[in-house]
Length: 610
Ligand code: FRU
Picture 1 (cartoon, rainbow, N blue to C red):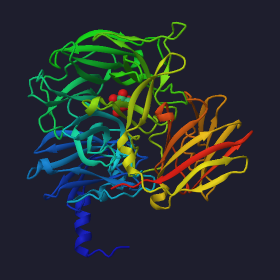
Picture 2: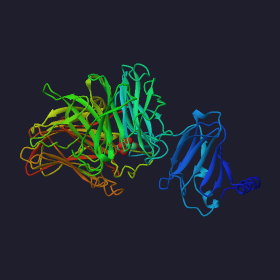
Picture 3: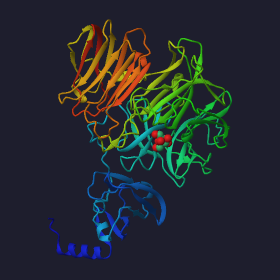
Picture 4: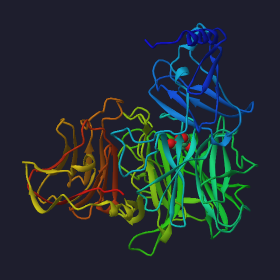
């Protein structure tokens, strides 16, 4: 037991009699009732540090500045133990009186009971917040938030040599809440700088997903080349709001006339672009529960006219439609151009939960007309054949006509349960989209790792050509540094083999089995014994992709980054993204074939980041 002085004990008794708790680390705690407590900030430190216990319910934290309600956040304040802490930045309120008026929801029999909560003695003030990585599953070369929860990437644009990535972020905990646009930037799409919050919740609600574009014509009146952001303000309703930035997306000013668009039903994730042909802004909005996308146009980003609705009864209808994107691309090897409409869907993905479907067709500025197959039906197409690529959308204004996309590397089925704490969720590798015509006459999207990713390759640790594969597996070691993060480049010629098996494994007995079945034209990945899988019954899974073959030879690029495996086949004609949580990093790749001999060439590159 600590050695308290008599005076301290007396002070503590007096404080407790008055409902006050001992000031700890610069805050004073005053209990007003069984579920209501004031935390007063004394002094001018940079942060209030809030203690979180993930299994607890959210407390409503009203932040009062000079007696006025400044903002509200929901934080799982600790009851019996502190899992981790989160910072609230006091910088904007320097020299002013800051008080947190906190309302908890737990059942209490008395104030005395409420006082015992672990959080009260763990509120503190600090000038720094340690964001050094504490997670073995944090990827090395994929984008992650420094701390807190992340879902959809959104609002991405490219300007003056910089790729801007915003994301759905909870700065106050590692589960979904307090949706804010976090902001990161990169000059090469793989090394990211973190800038914290760019657009924060307000009286209209949390800041859900949306998009950004550069106003080259000053059509909205916020200045030529202003960055415009459209997002969903989400509270009881979902309405669309506008914000603009004159400093290249570092800070945004919200349009005082918000909301700019309201509907009576759930609609979200506005994705807009300037259409030079119609000289109008064009926005696709997810009419989530109606399983369709709405197309609006506007001359100025403020007045919107509904032009059409797309999708009722088409594609996969098994979940809400979210996070759309619409753009035009050339079809490889033809003089043709086609429009691609991405419609993320949750649940209803090919392997359960969240996934990204897309449609190819034509767009006349008002209406999207999908291509049909030989039977006159609109085929369902998937961007990725793993379980962990959701909310894929593209960067606007990317250079050289590029269409680079990135997805949230998780699945709503279990994203909040994955075994990390300091942060939850990473993004996929950036991918460049192109279109190709398949053997069935349909146009498909190919998603290959963006060329910037090639710069991550170190000197290969394995380089083998024309290796004969049979039943007896041949094993290759993965790089030792950085927990074996790597890229594997493989060319498989199955010859007479029925299947070719590629197995990642470690000394703990965890393994991931990937199988190429040339006759079926499929590639599959089995993560049922990949490591920790029991946090959700939806996690153990086998995922299978069509190979869209180029003959029987299959080329693969397989990226491993601590807790993810991404596979790109035949130059991106299929992609498969799956999370894994091995007990120890995978240390070996073994190759074997069944039913006959196959040939393989492979290189294993360590991944080096700056
Ligand atoms: C998709 C989504 C979006 C919404 C956001 C909220 O994952 O549900 O529709 O804007 O997440 O964080």
